[in-house]
Amino acid sequence: MSASKYDVIAIGNAIVDIIGRCDDAYLTKHDCLKGHMRLVDAPTITALYRGLGESTEISGGSAANTAVGIASFGGRAAFIGKIADDAFGATFTRDIVSAGVAFSAAPSTIGVPTSCSLILVTPDGERTMNTMLGISTHLGDTELIPSMIADAKILYLEGYLFDRTEAKAAFRKAVSIAKAAGREVALTLSDGFCVDRHRDEFKALIRDGVDIVFANEDEIKSLYQVSDFSTAAKSAAVDMKLGVLTRGALGSVILSNGRQISIPVAPVAHVIDSTGAGDLYAAGFLYGYSQGATLEQAGRLGSLAAAEIIIQIGARPAKALKNLTHA
Image (cartoon, rainbow, N blue to C red):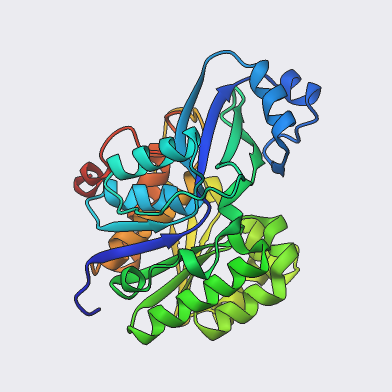
Protein backbone atom coordinates (compact mmCIF):
# COMPACT_ATOMS: atom_id res chain seq x y z
CA MET A 1 0.00 0.00 0.00
CA SER A 2 1.20 3.53 -0.78
CA ALA A 3 1.95 6.14 1.87
CA SER A 4 -1.12 7.44 3.66
CA LYS A 5 -2.20 9.60 6.57
CA TYR A 6 -4.67 7.01 7.92
CA ASP A 7 -4.68 3.25 8.12
CA VAL A 8 -8.48 3.04 8.02
CA ILE A 9 -11.30 5.52 7.50
CA ALA A 10 -14.72 4.23 8.51
CA ILE A 11 -18.10 5.51 7.34
CA GLY A 12 -21.14 4.60 9.39
CA ASN A 13 -23.84 5.57 11.84
CA ALA A 14 -22.82 8.02 14.56
CA ILE A 15 -24.79 6.68 17.53
CA VAL A 16 -24.65 7.25 21.26
CA ASP A 17 -25.04 3.97 23.13
CA ILE A 18 -27.00 3.86 26.38
CA ILE A 19 -26.00 0.59 28.05
CA GLY A 20 -28.05 -0.86 30.89
CA ARG A 21 -28.45 -4.23 32.59
CA CYS A 22 -31.76 -6.07 32.95
CA ASP A 23 -33.25 -9.55 33.27
CA ASP A 24 -35.18 -11.56 30.68
CA ALA A 25 -38.49 -10.52 32.24
CA TYR A 26 -37.71 -6.87 31.44
CA LEU A 27 -37.18 -7.79 27.78
CA THR A 28 -40.50 -9.64 27.70
CA LYS A 29 -42.30 -6.74 29.37
CA HIS A 30 -41.12 -4.36 26.67
CA ASP A 31 -41.57 -6.76 23.72
CA CYS A 32 -37.83 -6.99 23.05
CA LEU A 33 -36.64 -10.05 21.12
CA LYS A 34 -33.56 -11.19 23.01
CA GLY A 35 -30.30 -10.89 21.10
CA HIS A 36 -31.77 -8.87 18.24
CA MET A 37 -31.78 -5.27 17.12
CA ARG A 38 -34.99 -3.35 16.47
CA LEU A 39 -35.69 0.17 15.31
CA VAL A 40 -37.75 2.23 17.77
CA ASP A 41 -39.02 5.76 18.19
CA ALA A 42 -38.21 8.31 20.88
CA PRO A 43 -41.14 7.40 23.20
CA THR A 44 -40.04 3.74 23.22
CA ILE A 45 -36.48 4.72 24.12
CA THR A 46 -37.85 6.89 26.92
CA ALA A 47 -40.02 4.07 28.32
CA LEU A 48 -37.15 1.59 28.25
CA TYR A 49 -34.74 4.06 29.81
CA ARG A 50 -37.15 5.02 32.59
CA GLY A 51 -37.33 1.48 33.95
CA LEU A 52 -33.58 0.92 34.09
CA GLY A 53 -31.30 1.50 37.00
CA GLU A 54 -27.77 2.73 36.45
CA SER A 55 -26.69 3.07 32.82
CA THR A 56 -23.63 4.15 30.84
CA GLU A 57 -23.64 6.59 27.91
CA ILE A 58 -20.86 6.45 25.34
CA SER A 59 -20.50 7.11 21.64
CA GLY A 60 -21.07 4.03 19.54
CA GLY A 61 -22.13 2.77 16.15
CA SER A 62 -20.64 -0.31 14.50
CA ALA A 63 -18.05 1.29 12.21
CA ALA A 64 -17.23 3.94 14.82
CA ASN A 65 -16.50 1.15 17.32
CA THR A 66 -14.17 -0.43 14.79
CA ALA A 67 -12.37 2.88 14.24
CA VAL A 68 -11.88 3.29 18.00
CA GLY A 69 -10.56 -0.26 18.22
CA ILE A 70 -8.01 0.43 15.49
CA ALA A 71 -6.86 3.56 17.32
CA SER A 72 -6.58 1.55 20.54
CA PHE A 73 -4.20 -0.83 18.75
CA GLY A 74 -2.08 2.18 17.86
CA GLY A 75 -3.41 2.53 14.33
CA ARG A 76 -4.32 5.73 12.55
CA ALA A 77 -8.11 5.83 12.29
CA ALA A 78 -10.65 8.34 10.99
CA PHE A 79 -14.45 8.33 10.96
CA ILE A 80 -17.16 9.97 8.88
CA GLY A 81 -20.70 10.13 10.27
CA LYS A 82 -23.54 12.61 10.82
CA ILE A 83 -24.51 14.11 14.18
CA ALA A 84 -26.95 16.78 15.34
CA ASP A 85 -26.22 19.96 17.26
CA ASP A 86 -27.44 18.54 20.57
CA ALA A 87 -26.14 16.98 23.79
CA PHE A 88 -25.79 13.49 22.32
CA GLY A 89 -23.95 14.94 19.32
CA ALA A 90 -21.48 16.58 21.69
CA THR A 91 -21.10 13.29 23.60
CA PHE A 92 -20.34 11.41 20.40
CA THR A 93 -17.73 13.93 19.26
CA ARG A 94 -16.02 14.12 22.64
CA ASP A 95 -15.77 10.36 23.04
CA ILE A 96 -14.53 9.45 19.59
CA VAL A 97 -11.95 12.24 19.43
CA SER A 98 -10.66 11.44 22.91
CA ALA A 99 -10.23 7.83 21.73
CA GLY A 100 -7.75 9.02 19.11
CA VAL A 101 -9.98 8.90 16.02
CA ALA A 102 -9.98 11.79 13.56
CA PHE A 103 -13.53 13.17 13.34
CA SER A 104 -14.50 16.64 12.18
CA ALA A 105 -18.19 16.53 11.22
CA ALA A 106 -20.13 19.80 11.40
CA PRO A 107 -23.25 19.20 13.57
CA SER A 108 -26.57 19.39 11.69
CA THR A 109 -29.22 21.90 12.75
CA ILE A 110 -32.19 20.54 10.74
CA GLY A 111 -34.04 19.42 13.88
CA VAL A 112 -33.49 15.66 13.71
CA PRO A 113 -31.72 14.43 16.88
CA THR A 114 -28.45 12.54 17.13
CA SER A 115 -28.99 8.81 16.82
CA CYS A 116 -28.98 6.68 19.96
CA SER A 117 -29.25 3.01 20.86
CA LEU A 118 -30.39 1.61 24.18
CA ILE A 119 -28.58 -1.70 24.69
CA LEU A 120 -30.05 -4.05 27.25
CA VAL A 121 -27.55 -6.57 28.62
CA THR A 122 -28.89 -9.69 30.34
CA PRO A 123 -26.93 -11.74 32.92
CA ASP A 124 -25.77 -14.20 30.24
CA GLY A 125 -23.99 -11.37 28.39
CA GLU A 126 -26.46 -11.29 25.51
CA ARG A 127 -27.29 -7.80 24.22
CA THR A 128 -30.61 -6.60 22.84
CA MET A 129 -30.49 -3.36 20.91
CA ASN A 130 -33.21 -0.73 20.61
CA THR A 131 -32.08 1.87 18.11
CA MET A 132 -33.50 5.29 17.26
CA LEU A 133 -31.90 6.08 13.90
CA GLY A 134 -32.03 9.87 14.14
CA ILE A 135 -29.75 12.07 12.03
CA SER A 136 -27.02 9.52 11.30
CA THR A 137 -29.05 7.85 8.54
CA HIS A 138 -29.30 11.18 6.71
CA LEU A 139 -25.65 10.95 5.69
CA GLY A 140 -25.12 11.81 2.04
CA ASP A 141 -22.53 13.04 -0.42
CA THR A 142 -22.08 16.35 1.39
CA GLU A 143 -20.77 14.60 4.54
CA LEU A 144 -17.98 12.85 2.65
CA ILE A 145 -14.49 14.29 2.98
CA PRO A 146 -12.76 13.17 -0.24
CA SER A 147 -9.26 14.14 0.88
CA MET A 148 -9.54 11.95 4.00
CA ILE A 149 -10.95 8.99 2.06
CA ALA A 150 -8.16 9.23 -0.53
CA ASP A 151 -5.58 9.44 2.25
CA ALA A 152 -6.55 6.17 4.00
CA LYS A 153 -5.16 2.74 3.17
CA ILE A 154 -8.58 1.15 3.68
CA LEU A 155 -12.11 2.54 3.42
CA TYR A 156 -14.45 0.63 5.77
CA LEU A 157 -18.21 0.81 5.11
CA GLU A 158 -20.98 -0.07 7.58
CA GLY A 159 -23.86 -2.02 6.05
CA TYR A 160 -26.33 -0.70 8.63
CA LEU A 161 -26.15 2.71 6.91
CA PHE A 162 -27.28 1.36 3.56
CA ASP A 163 -31.05 1.88 3.93
CA ARG A 164 -31.51 5.36 2.46
CA THR A 165 -30.97 6.28 -1.19
CA GLU A 166 -28.69 9.16 -0.19
CA ALA A 167 -26.47 6.88 1.88
CA LYS A 168 -26.20 4.34 -0.94
CA ALA A 169 -25.07 7.12 -3.28
CA ALA A 170 -22.55 8.29 -0.68
CA PHE A 171 -21.17 4.75 -0.34
CA ARG A 172 -20.70 4.42 -4.08
CA LYS A 173 -19.05 7.81 -4.31
CA ALA A 174 -16.73 6.96 -1.42
CA VAL A 175 -15.77 3.70 -3.14
CA SER A 176 -14.97 5.56 -6.34
CA ILE A 177 -12.79 8.07 -4.44
CA ALA A 178 -10.91 5.27 -2.67
CA LYS A 179 -10.40 3.28 -5.85
CA ALA A 180 -9.18 6.33 -7.78
CA ALA A 181 -6.56 6.81 -5.06
CA GLY A 182 -5.47 3.17 -5.29
CA ARG A 183 -6.94 2.24 -1.90
CA GLU A 184 -8.76 -0.88 -0.68
CA VAL A 185 -12.41 -1.02 0.33
CA ALA A 186 -13.93 -3.13 3.12
CA LEU A 187 -17.62 -3.71 3.83
CA THR A 188 -19.31 -5.17 6.90
CA LEU A 189 -22.72 -6.71 6.21
CA SER A 190 -23.78 -5.67 9.74
CA ASP A 191 -26.94 -7.73 10.29
CA GLY A 192 -28.90 -10.60 8.74
CA PHE A 193 -32.02 -8.46 8.37
CA CYS A 194 -29.90 -5.76 6.76
CA VAL A 195 -28.69 -8.33 4.23
CA ASP A 196 -32.28 -9.40 3.56
CA ARG A 197 -33.15 -5.82 2.65
CA HIS A 198 -30.15 -5.19 0.40
CA ARG A 199 -28.98 -8.60 -0.81
CA ASP A 200 -28.71 -7.80 -4.52
CA GLU A 201 -27.20 -4.35 -3.96
CA PHE A 202 -24.64 -5.75 -1.52
CA LYS A 203 -23.66 -8.40 -4.05
CA ALA A 204 -23.28 -5.72 -6.71
CA LEU A 205 -21.17 -3.56 -4.40
CA ILE A 206 -18.96 -6.55 -3.55
CA ARG A 207 -18.56 -7.34 -7.24
CA ASP A 208 -17.85 -3.76 -8.29
CA GLY A 209 -15.36 -2.50 -5.73
CA VAL A 210 -15.18 -4.21 -2.34
CA ASP A 211 -11.90 -5.93 -1.53
CA ILE A 212 -12.67 -7.22 1.99
CA VAL A 213 -16.06 -8.44 3.27
CA PHE A 214 -16.82 -8.95 6.95
CA ALA A 215 -19.84 -11.07 7.88
CA ASN A 216 -20.99 -13.31 10.68
CA GLU A 217 -22.52 -16.74 10.08
CA ASP A 218 -26.12 -15.53 9.89
CA GLU A 219 -25.22 -12.71 7.52
CA ILE A 220 -23.26 -14.84 5.06
CA LYS A 221 -26.02 -17.47 5.01
CA SER A 222 -28.56 -14.73 4.37
CA LEU A 223 -26.44 -13.25 1.56
CA TYR A 224 -26.52 -16.56 -0.31
CA GLN A 225 -29.94 -17.68 0.98
CA VAL A 226 -28.68 -21.03 2.25
CA SER A 227 -29.13 -22.80 5.58
CA ASP A 228 -25.60 -24.04 6.26
CA PHE A 229 -22.33 -22.21 6.71
CA SER A 230 -20.15 -24.41 4.51
CA THR A 231 -22.32 -23.83 1.44
CA ALA A 232 -22.34 -20.08 2.07
CA ALA A 233 -18.56 -20.06 2.53
CA LYS A 234 -18.03 -21.86 -0.78
CA SER A 235 -20.08 -19.21 -2.58
CA ALA A 236 -18.27 -16.41 -0.76
CA ALA A 237 -14.91 -17.86 -1.74
CA VAL A 238 -15.91 -17.49 -5.40
CA ASP A 239 -17.36 -13.98 -5.13
CA MET A 240 -15.02 -12.26 -2.67
CA LYS A 241 -11.39 -11.24 -2.97
CA LEU A 242 -11.06 -11.57 0.80
CA GLY A 243 -13.85 -12.82 3.04
CA VAL A 244 -13.64 -12.63 6.84
CA LEU A 245 -16.41 -14.71 8.39
CA THR A 246 -16.99 -14.84 12.15
CA ARG A 247 -18.80 -17.73 13.85
CA GLY A 248 -19.01 -16.78 17.53
CA ALA A 249 -17.66 -19.55 19.76
CA LEU A 250 -16.58 -21.50 16.66
CA GLY A 251 -14.00 -18.85 15.80
CA SER A 252 -13.64 -17.35 12.34
CA VAL A 253 -12.82 -18.33 8.79
CA ILE A 254 -10.78 -16.25 6.35
CA LEU A 255 -11.26 -16.87 2.64
CA SER A 256 -8.55 -15.77 0.20
CA ASN A 257 -7.29 -17.05 -3.15
CA GLY A 258 -8.76 -20.51 -2.71
CA ARG A 259 -7.52 -20.81 0.87
CA GLN A 260 -9.77 -21.26 3.88
CA ILE A 261 -7.97 -20.28 7.07
CA SER A 262 -9.57 -21.21 10.40
CA ILE A 263 -8.90 -18.93 13.36
CA PRO A 264 -9.86 -20.16 16.85
CA VAL A 265 -11.47 -17.92 19.42
CA ALA A 266 -9.32 -16.46 22.17
CA PRO A 267 -10.62 -18.10 25.37
CA VAL A 268 -12.32 -16.08 28.10
CA ALA A 269 -13.43 -17.15 31.55
CA HIS A 270 -16.84 -15.48 31.47
CA VAL A 271 -18.76 -13.42 28.91
CA ILE A 272 -20.05 -10.20 30.46
CA ASP A 273 -21.37 -8.33 27.41
CA SER A 274 -21.15 -9.43 23.76
CA THR A 275 -21.81 -5.90 22.47
CA GLY A 276 -19.28 -4.97 19.84
CA ALA A 277 -17.57 -8.35 19.48
CA GLY A 278 -17.86 -8.26 15.69
CA ASP A 279 -16.85 -4.61 15.53
CA LEU A 280 -13.69 -5.24 17.53
CA TYR A 281 -12.84 -8.38 15.58
CA ALA A 282 -12.92 -6.18 12.47
CA ALA A 283 -10.72 -3.64 14.27
CA GLY A 284 -8.09 -6.21 15.11
CA PHE A 285 -8.13 -7.72 11.64
CA LEU A 286 -7.97 -4.37 9.83
CA TYR A 287 -5.24 -3.08 12.10
CA GLY A 288 -3.11 -6.15 11.46
CA TYR A 289 -3.86 -6.21 7.75
CA SER A 290 -3.06 -2.52 7.33
CA GLN A 291 0.29 -3.07 9.05
CA GLY A 292 1.27 -5.87 6.69
CA ALA A 293 0.47 -8.81 8.96
CA THR A 294 -0.34 -12.20 7.46
CA LEU A 295 -4.01 -13.17 7.26
CA GLU A 296 -3.48 -15.62 10.13
CA GLN A 297 -1.89 -12.90 12.26
CA ALA A 298 -4.65 -10.41 11.42
CA GLY A 299 -7.32 -12.99 12.29
CA ARG A 300 -5.62 -13.72 15.59
CA LEU A 301 -5.63 -10.02 16.45
CA GLY A 302 -9.32 -9.94 15.61
CA SER A 303 -10.02 -12.83 17.95
CA LEU A 304 -7.97 -11.27 20.74
CA ALA A 305 -9.80 -7.94 20.41
CA ALA A 306 -13.21 -9.64 20.37
CA ALA A 307 -12.29 -11.63 23.49
CA GLU A 308 -11.15 -8.46 25.24
CA ILE A 309 -14.40 -6.60 24.54
CA ILE A 310 -16.78 -9.35 25.72
CA ILE A 311 -15.32 -9.40 29.24
CA GLN A 312 -16.40 -5.79 29.88
CA ILE A 313 -19.51 -3.65 29.51
CA GLY A 314 -19.80 -1.76 26.23
CA ALA A 315 -18.19 -1.83 22.79
CA ARG A 316 -15.26 0.48 23.48
CA PRO A 317 -12.09 -1.10 24.92
CA ALA A 318 -11.40 -0.19 28.52
CA LYS A 319 -7.70 -1.03 28.11
CA ALA A 320 -5.33 -0.25 25.25
CA LEU A 321 -5.56 -3.03 22.68
CA LYS A 322 -1.98 -2.44 21.59
CA ASN A 323 -0.98 -4.53 24.60
CA LEU A 324 -2.56 -7.53 22.84
CA THR A 325 -0.01 -7.38 20.06
CA HIS A 326 2.52 -8.75 22.55
CA ALA A 327 0.26 -11.51 23.77
